[in-house]
Image: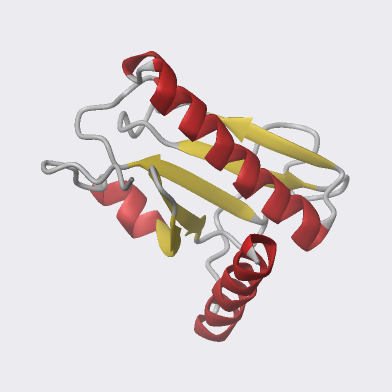
Length: 143
């Protein structure tokens, strides 16, 4: 079942700061346009959802499963030292979950990534390659 609901719109800031990778059952999976970190964002296609507690039990379970899928994708893709998973929403109130692969020595380590260094956008070539790699890994994992 696809949980696409009429009235859902991706927040313009998320749209501007990220690129589509895949469509999961509940969420859009997007790549943040910051090559400093392998960084995915899951956005549930639910109009008006701002907090995890806005989701009923079944949708929370579905979201958790999709966070797990994204986290395993990043772990298997780049073997990080740590995975950061967060749903903050202080600047973008639309419910979204960050899954960030972190490495000792990355530009913000060990602090959170927010506000530490300027985002480093992917080059067009690197962006196409990264998204293709992620999509291929998703296909392989589903097979």
